[in-house]
Length: 215
Image (cartoon, rainbow, N blue to C red; front, side):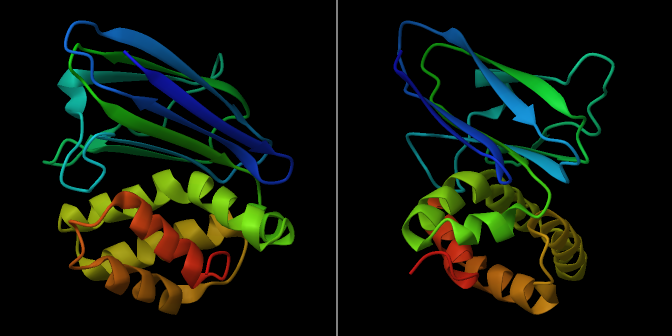
């Protein structure tokens, strides 16, 4: 079982971790993600999808990859992981408790998955843009992945468009610390609609491109 972990931590931006699990027909296992939530973090996002079929049409589901989210001692998780029919799982925790969160992934033999977790710092977008376009684009992909996948799952589950727009506008404005407004969210959702067969990375790049961090 091959496991690849990518971690990005930047002061003033936040902490992001991605774990890629390649399928092994003979062995399962366990992997732990530790994510440090900064003070006054507006949100923590988690997304789990299939690493070997990296589109919105396939995810590991709760049976193949069990995900246990453990907040710091004395804190509670507000909400639970939501699974789309495709098996993609997402979790959004608003105003998560400061400190180290522990996410345990227990995967069955033959399972493949990509699990991304991001804890944002307040107004991290302003700091991210100052890091420069090249680094900013790469960082944008890593940090926005679970947020973008959550938005896509909301669409796939046929949430009311107006409700989706309002909810995402509020979340993104709070997280980015910018007044991107409903127009940005509408453009983002229009870009996503009708392209569910595309790789997830394409959607993430489009989101980063719309706000000027990627070409």
